[in-house]
Every structure is written in C-alpha cells, then in structure tokens.
Length: 177
Image (cartoon, rainbow, N blue to C red):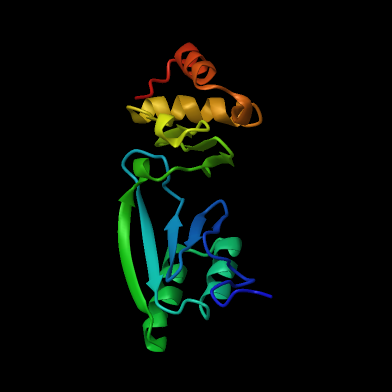
C-alpha cells in the first residue's frame, strides 16, 4: 500500500539530477536548479520553485530534467502551472554557491554525514545522545577537500571513530569546527 503523500514518479525527499538540472521534491513543492553555471565564479544559476499540489507537474519536471531542457523551456513550462492554481517562484543563485556534483550522504546508526563541494558536516552519535559530536567545515576550500576525500572513502566512513576522522581531515588539510 502506498501512502497518500507518496508518488511513484517523484517520491518525497528525492533529488534527481542530470548534467544540466537538479530537482528536489519537498512535501509541498519542487525546486529545480540549473547546473549550467554551477561551481563557476561570475556565473548565475536560475532556480525555479513550484508550490502547491505538485503531483500533476512532477512527471513533466522529471522529463525536462532528464532531457536537459533549456532554461527558457523550463521557465515557460513551470510558469504555466499558475493556470492550474499552483504557485511559481523564480530566483537566481551565484554559480559558486551551487555544487556542480551531487552531495555524498552517509546515514548509519551512530553517524550522519553530508559532504558537498560547498559545505560538509558530520555528526557522531555514540550510545549516549548527550555525548554526540557535530563537526562542520570552516571554509568552502575545506569542504572541497573533504568532498574529494569522501568520494574515495565513503565506504570506510561508517566504521570510523571521531579520532580517526579528525586525523584523516588533518592529513588532507581540511579544518572542521
């Protein structure tokens, strides 16, 4: 049995990416971000958000992301949803603020970590919740180093201790708080 708020086409909490678009499904919205200028200084990345009952537009968004639709095509397609009673918002992000590659996420008992090109954070949760340790990168350059490390070491991460993680980050020059 499928929950009422779950969709087969684009489930809640899912991120779909292509070489040119990243779309994320929230409970009441879909956010679509252009990756054409992602990670680049001086470039802009248009971002479109559709809010409301997005079930009807989800298949079209998935198709446009997979096909690599142009920015104007995506804008026109999503702007038309206001005719169906949905809300449409357009914004723009600086290219350097949009990670060009997908985030690496690790979520296992005792550890939650997210590494992207622009930020990285990790939470060690021992048996006692009062002793948990949360770490985050200081700078964007530290996040980039940690992301490169995580690409090569994601399989090892679930078994690492806090001390081992700090040693590894120190060895690559990535500073965490």
